[in-house]
Image: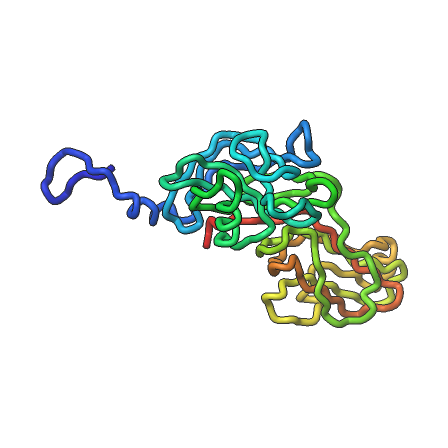
Length: 284
């Protein structure tokens, strides 16, 4: 509400929704995702919260509810959330808040597409879904036989179990190579990684670098690395070399770049995924 500055009247005038939506661009509060305690294999709990749709036009508010990935979408809590036109599979599922005109009847929908227009078309094809016009991605989950266990705090998603080992190998050479890490596909995230170089008998300095494919490929060096092994008697007593926790932007295929300098046959490069940062459309 604002004061009428033209007339000087003390009355208040309601802001038009179109003006309000520009202030709420990207707005997302609550709607935190969690593995369901009764059926963690298939179900997701969504906390109460609110958001604005992907076009920044329509706010929607949701009560807490539980949705099932192993069933086609149906409105309401303890009902299905999956795009019913496609069988359940091991992949990334993007979780959307959806609503009808003016934010009516908000609910949750899961689809493998990260494109909102595709999701709305699929939602409208659901039984009882034809009136749904708006959607907003609020997070993403990964399924491999079961929904991978995670914990969310704001934009940060951490894998509940031990970090996922995505690479454990002799790199073979000093050339750059793409590496797929365990983060949701179809979207750009910031992967939270552990990176180490192992050399049981170090004889020369070896440097490792994990970087984003969005950046220029450069060779690791003493001033440009995020894991290393120094060739010295002191370092020989620490076979794993250094272990760094780093954050690297992925592409939409969950890929980053790995590279070493000074590699020999007894080197092993190790990359584990701890979790990822997903801003979920808040910033763009």
